[in-house]
Length: 543
Ligand code: VG1
Ligand code: CO
Image 1 (spheres, protein in one colour):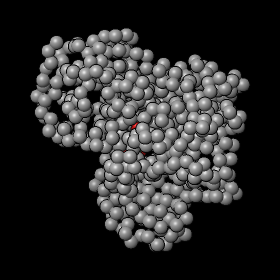
Image 2 (cartoon, rainbow, N blue to C red):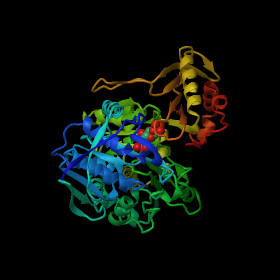
Image 3 (tube, rainbow, N blue to C red):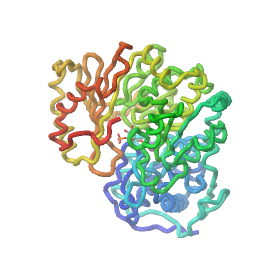
Image 4 (cartoon, rainbow, N blue to C red):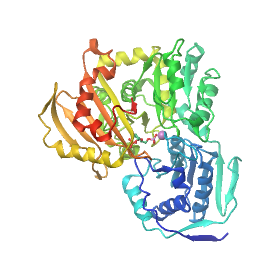
């Protein structure tokens, strides 16, 4: 088998964002585009002769072609063994788990997560390191630097392999193990949660709806919820992964998971609802006529962790991304646990998890996870909730309301302005930065500014510094406004505005968040001049 070395040229636009390299399919389809990036990974990461490489994706359009190309490049670069999910399918948390389980040298996840799929939509590739997590910034920077100078890549001239046939096959000299993508992850879930107790809950007539959004979690949810836990057939809806996600937007929020939202807020709603995103790492959880914000979900999970077998007496701390509400901080303070604030993106939790400083972590963007893998894990969060519900025998709404009575409520909302003109978005951010120094002690309506800064993170483990991670404006009463530009969009810029206020008084816990936060929302809009600078009257999505 002779290795072919193909001459190529750099593309200059292969800088990984919040979560890997994400572009339109048309960009990825340019000759050498994917190959260049993959070769840069092999050029910058250590030798891969022995430990395997894990490869799989969320099944979106171009998944199969990308996998064939990656396998050839891996083999040509001396990789001895690859582990592949049948049909090219792996959820992101499943890849993370398999890297750890097999002490692999890393893995490639093919996904653009919650972004739509199809020939005119998005594709993505992410490299995960041997700890199972997304590559740290210094790794992605090295890959990016290599991509600016690449002039050749190595590949093989071999036929495509059959991705659907379980068992062992070869690409050149590289052994490829094609495995069931679901069973290892499902086994891991069984170790962490009380499946007998959850099974009994379903037997008692408890009803649930899980919306897989035509994305990767369908097979996982069917196996775990319907087969292993005995939930009635039909509990999982939209359970077959489709290349274009049924023309949907596989983002588990109240806007895009409309079918689920309609059921959960309609007549005869089930007891519990949940959804996951394209690659299975996000989760949304709902009770009957009740939405749980991801920030609250993290806090509730933290406060109830002792109820589950996998976390009893072993939670040492929690971390949340900076824009995530401070609800978890209140629980951590009461329980005497470590609490960290990190920049947006799961890669920033890696060092804290690896060093045992934290056990649980989460983001406001429907991401929750723990030290069981090094990615957020949608089904894991859903099972955590199911286990809490089975243990406490209360409704979702009662559990959350009781949580607010104990810890107070952090009202929270996120306003997204999608596909905004990039230059206008950057000017908006620059204008805010220019005003920051003058803001402290200013009175804005009923609120007095305490501090204003551009979040800078000093990693407590490796001392690496990440600058400009979002503009924060903190008020004396603990309320906050945060502005960030998204690093996962593929069209123009997405401006995210995060607004939070703390309410200790239980008599004030039943307001609509948009009302409870109305004055802060106005302040956020006028401070940044959103209407004038973006030309938008209202956000694209309100969460
Ligand atoms: C978004 C979320 C962030 C998340 C990231 C990847 O990033 O805000 O919390 O980690 O997506 O999630 P951004 O830069 O667009 O705000 V996923 O499910 O795409 O791996
Ligand atoms: Co995702």
